[in-house]
Image: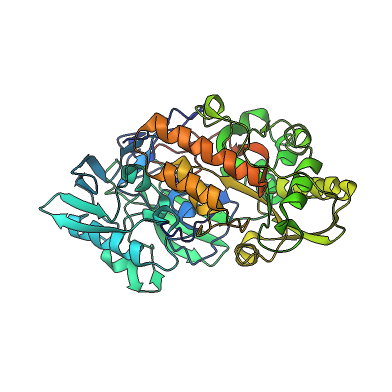
Length: 499
């Protein structure tokens, strides 16, 4: 079994028609701005930087959502690999791909060359922990001529173009790599907006990068604020302090004018994860009892007030092919009577609905006979303990296609013995076997079938209880146009975003 190292909450052969919603690629929205002018955008993000804006962890999506970074490929509206810094690619044998680069410039003025791209990808492969998109993958990148990067993997990787769209594999110039432990994206990326100042976990300043290959942005820059409190984000939008506020809490949606709120179906599922390796839920019968105790029907209607869809599985309705291929859970244990031990349930408050969802779970488990202690913290203060298995249960909102766009990748990282984001601490030989078989398949339809077979095994373990499939509410001022409503939550502003 290949090792699947750490994946964060932060997956041309898998062409999935996933999405119902509006989505546009940041590079292709417009060919130019409005002269030397253009107003600055005032944007609030929900998650403050947790790792000094390293592209290799949870901060990668902060950089991509602000239009700072990009990779060789991007995801289009159908979930397919689309050109970004690479204008085309082809497969050369089972283990090698060749990517032809477009003419592009780094924000520090140097050219995007095959050697620079190869160096950037090499740094990503050497990072500890490994970026989510490289979980279980070993690759090497080399320049070939003036325009081609040749990438070879240790094992056949049929989804490599999709994998390279991950925000954690953004291409940066050589000057970004300060040392082996630190990557500095400030002024060293390729996107339409350049970071010029970062004020810790409070705010950041970005200016338009005029030499962007996709055309000059219409906004002259971005003043970004990191506001973890969802009510504060909504209030700032309503009072005119912000132009864009991401992840508006459901409870605040009604306080915004209908014209200023946009809800988007996403590939994000909120689930209850049960620690399968220690504590009360090490016993499969106790996990089955917890699963039976949870009434998932209340979450979409009550907690999310209609801005969500009832739970169907690990993949929700935004993954449109999944429902027709879903099969019943396999291998479920008989539910036992709760043993009476106190279980420590945890969640985070960056997504305001999660504490309420966790409170409902707590009440339902207690009604069934469990004793429950609830812990709520900001995500960056919780992740380490969660990954270390220090909680018995965890309510998590997880975008199943964020890391690579590949549905198998999230199963490998979250539910296999060597999975790097295995908060459920699940280690089941049948699950590992099912996921391993799915990873080997190149054919799109057959890979989907295998992913659903693996999902059935995972759900049968009762280590995960899907609760609800989220819709994300974005607050957008009346004066703003061109906000990118991305189902994958990778992008938010692009060259056509303006006010």
